Image 1: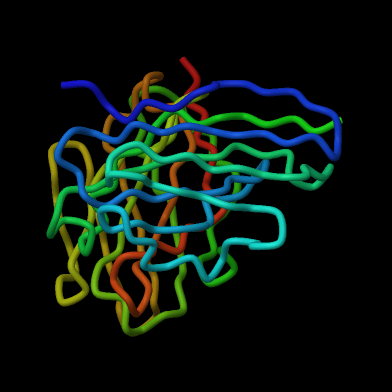
Image 2 (image 1 turned 180 degrees about the horizontal axis):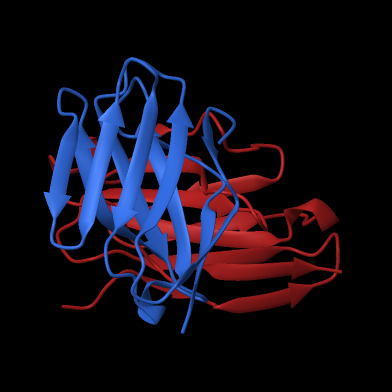
Length: 116
Length: 111
């Protein structure tokens, strides 16, 4: 069974440029998460989707960050414009219905963003 | 995760036991977790413990929970070089779905 797939794995951009990350969750996983992981830190939740609905986006900086999950499967996370402080790893995770409550999240390998 | 504290580094010799400690603050957490992250990879759930338990054993892994002191530990018996990774302690938030992670403990296993 394929795991959570993210792309691109690495992205280098100049500040003020836009960037987008894509995530394909495990088939059948209704819940999808985007996490931000700064260097030397643990992941921090940006947004959680239940199917196509964003049920928790309280930590998403809405002035420059946006996310969508059309059709309740794939998801994209966009930053526009990117700032130097956005350099981090963006992790996508998914979980089966009913297992999200016990923290059984399956993570992708992450998209590492470097903003110059 | 400022609510979850872990020591940052641990070095052990192959074959020894490793003990990684964690303290958390949210007494309402239902579950507590240990995730493992290998270089260049995503996080992988290692094990979890329900908050009404004080111990859980799974092969080489032993999780101890002291709910009174809000202290969680992960013991790895017979540590192997393949166990070298970053280990994250996490608690679930009040909503049950958002995990608060610690900064991670980098475990180095030397031959």
